[in-house]
Amino acid sequence: MHEIRKMNSKTASTTVHTSLLERLREVFVAGEFVEGDKVPEAALCERFGVSRTPLREALKVLAAEGHVELLPNRGARVRALSIAEAEGLFSVAGALEALAGEQACERISPEEIDALQTMHDEMRACRNRHDMAAYYALNMRIHSSIVDATRNPVLIGVYSTLNARISRIRFASPMSDDIWARAMAEHEGMQNALMRRDGAALSSILKTHLKHKCESILASMTAQQAATTGQRGTRRRSTRTVAEASAVSE
Image (cartoon, rainbow, N blue to C red; front, side, top):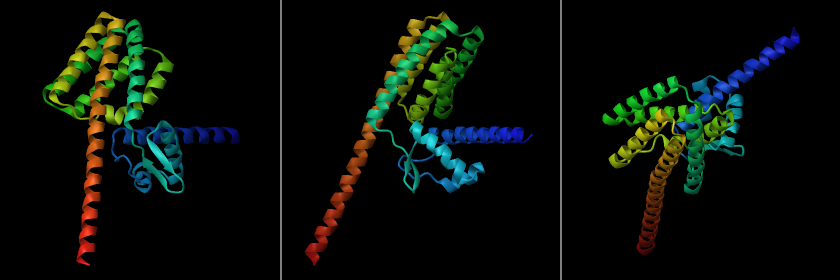
């Protein structure tokens, strides 16, 4: 009986840890916290109703996944993706989704194709009314559903881990009308290829689709980095000017 109680306690603890980890991961994927900011442990403990010990255990897992950076004796901070890292992640994601396209066309059920068509139609409606948040939510479900349709647990697991690292920039970045129209056209092609079960076509479209998304995001990151560097330079020049003026007045 004692051993049974120990097993039940261990199972409950594992369930709580898994649930906390999933909810905490969603917080970082959704981009609730700014890159570089310190993780508000006390607020998260209160929000999820846990103590600091399980929270910090979950943060260790998220650090291994690349969401946060652990600081010795100072908690953790939200990890920023570098341009080189983002480019590398997208290139791997593109290769994984290309493989998923081939395998999904071989294994997907008619019911799953119908479900994807429904999501696609809903996503098109979001595009027409310029509801970007809802569009991205459906977009993420469509890509994940194609990967799930491969019935390949290794591919699904690797893709899930990698996609979690880039979701906050992949499924949240702003798009111009031209880029949005192109993305929607590519999704039309993806759905048509699925309905024909044309694995080669779907693979090619998915790889190109991810390449275009990567180019758009890298351009945005580069512009943001240049703007930040410019602001720092302006502040330094302003500080130097004030110091020089003070020296002259003395």
